Length: 122
Image (cartoon, rainbow, N blue to C red):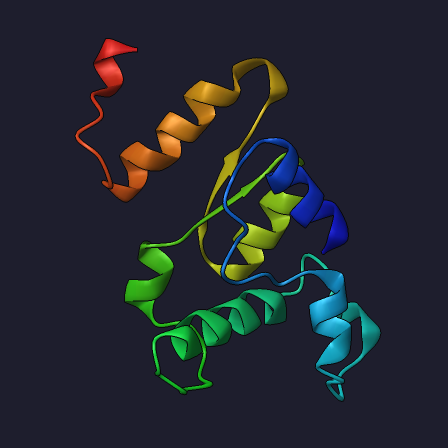
């Protein structure tokens, strides 16, 4: 969590409202095997969905719905660990490469349809 906060600060970005860092997961004191608390375990995606829902007052603790999975993209830099995590969780994956970071983020924007971004103009 400290590293994530520092990274956001260095880049002048607003701190995330929700963070599912290693410390967060350990603090939950879940009674599950240790391997369920690290990628690629889909339990982490479920925990993230529960946190997100709770931030809107929805306290369901069920698995992600089909619709939620369709609207989720896991973004990461490691195609093995992050890509496998996304696959195990049933969501799309977008790799962020240091040499084409801007285009990778534009792909996320386009896939989520959160902008009038025109992929052909890049």
